[in-house]
Amino acid sequence: MELPVTDANTFQMFVEWLYSRKLLLDPMEEELARMRMLPDLAFLYIFADNYDVPLLERDTMDAIISCAQKDYALPDSEVISHVYDNLPEDSPLCRLLAHEYARTGQALAGSPDDWPDRFVFEAFNATMRAKERRSALVRPAHDCTYHQHTTEAQKRACINR
Image 1 (spheres, rainbow, N blue to C red):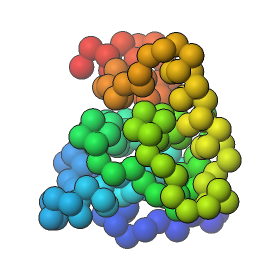
Image 2: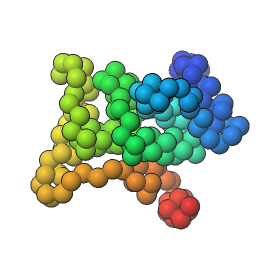
Image 3: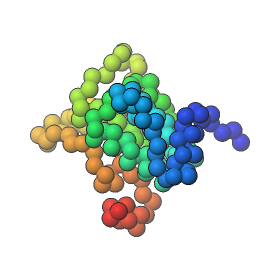
């Protein structure tokens, strides 16, 4: 069996989470932390998905949503491509990133070939659906919209926490 190569930083974040159940992100200079945090969390989310660690996936998604609520810089095309290449089409992280680009109106830097087609399509559709409803896209909330629950009981427990 061949295992995917895992970045040392991602594995370190996993081990820290494993022992503390917290995502201890390096409190670097504020601006540098803002630029690095979302990519690190995206890689950790992919790790959790690949190794089927649903609790880590949920905790990582909550941390990503917290970053979005604080208007942290969105990941660039390289990170977005990595996310789309390594997660299933219906991944909540893919939906969240497309939604956030649509909500913030952040321009896509680089050339069209730099961005995954599915991401561009999803971001465009999120923008058009909001325009059609004449309602602004809102910041994501901790309401299980971007969580994956296997049972209704899990979803109810998550909503009530």
